[in-house]
Image (tube, rainbow, N blue to C red; front, side, top):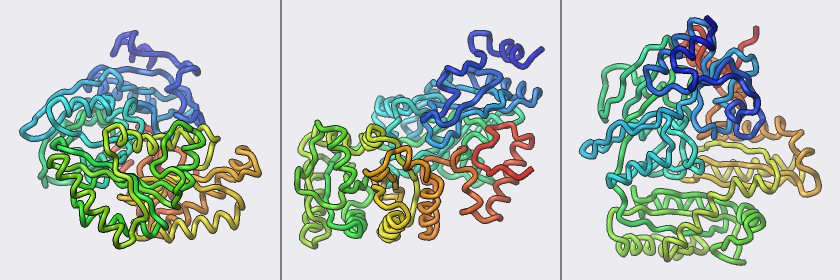
Length: 472
């Protein structure tokens, strides 16, 4: 019996599809990578996932698991060999358990992130992971890439929001690790090993997630700075004044606001024509009533104005104004797309080195590629910058993209020199896989290979992702 027929016998013909190049799941989000497969399967339970993996192992067929296909590193796109089985978890979208006494929520990996947030709100709790793609990305994909988002400053990455996992191993066994424990020192932390591994070590099928109290009030403000150094300084001031209530600190350059106004002319800029070089969108989630939260907000911003840490600030006076401020931040990716493809860099740095990095790297790029335009924004609170570079106005996008590898290497080299990472929240996938030897030590790479060999000795789980290809 063929592998395809075996899979149909396991899942039923309805849930096993043949290769079809027109299917969006065979390409990455930006249509830069395309694959072919032996089959596309839609298991409905963890036991069926395990059965599929055992069948694939028997036929030596690689398994690529995919969630919402919103990733930016082509980490869930199969290769073009036609040997892989693409495993979609769209049927595994159930909320299995809610425990408000333990503040946990157990969900299957195919749950859409926005639905997880709703399930938490329905029981008077908050699940704080929030991304631009939350309406289509899945919790399994978030776990696979250790997604970040806008709330990392207060709540941490997906890893910090996860207590337990259920995982199907490369042998088709099931690790039942859905423990709602905040303390468990009984050996190696397998949970943290699987989170962020992009499906190369095991297939996450469910997770037990942390819940938090719903904040009584939220306050949002747009703050203007004369320099990036001033923005970094104000972040320290805000942390001291707000404490754990400071939820978000999102940086945008003046160039970003100009681009937003060009591509979304209906947008209302908080400061009108009073431009400053740098801005931050900050949000406070407070456990007390709105009046108390606003008083704290005004006090911290007022002292910053007096000490000249900030140039100006606009505090949202309504939910609609708050949403309009957030819409500016959330429209950045679409604004760039409308203006033409550019070179995106998802990097992280120690917050204390960000100003040096930006000044140095901006200058280096102008020296080597005169006229390029920087659109720098991101999660300043946790040191994650989206350092994006657009074509000079005197040349075309196509002419600019010819220099992708050389320009990106300058950016990545600079991030590394300032103690940073070339991937903050988007993962490695295929796009950054072969860059790792330049920035990771041989010891690190050898340890990663040993872990892969131990957990997936036949290299059947998402091969060709994360780990650099070895010379044959």
